[in-house]
Length: 181
Image 1 (cartoon, rainbow, N blue to C red):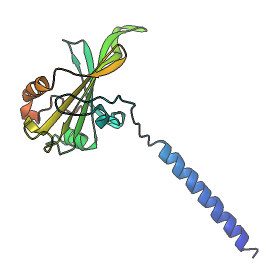
Image 2 (cartoon, rainbow, N blue to C red; image 1 turned 120 degrees about the horizontal axis):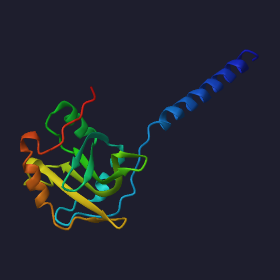
Image 3 (cartoon, helix red, strand yellow; image 1 turned 120 degrees about the vertical axis):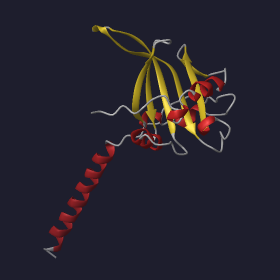
Image 4 (tube, rainbow, N blue to C red; image 1 turned 90 degrees about the vertical axis):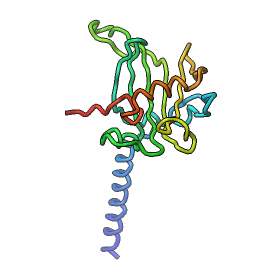
């Protein structure tokens, strides 16, 4: 009995430390669900909520639109990320999110620009069931932010489709993965 008590105590302590260790490891694996409004694109029924976890996507590229004075971050879900990384066709369920920010001069470093306020969040999703007639089977959604609130783009997605047709030789995607060398 004297030997069993120390062994039991050792097992309990070991088990407790393993639980603490697991908890610490899991705390670094954040999964963020964004509080996005319940908005839907009028002509294709794509919901803003469909990308409510976009903050967990990986940034694959950035670019600057001179016509809109807008810095854009391009993010991809796991399926799309693999395709970007390997420069391969995108599988069903690929989601690409583009966040457009207006820019301003940095207050503490005036020769640099920085993102200021979000102007829009757009996304595209590869889904041959829902978008069999769209080139590449991509569906598009755009949510514009004005006066602190988002609203669905009311001009439809024809301009998205027409524009992305310019990139048909790159799977209808403009951005390329920006590899760190």
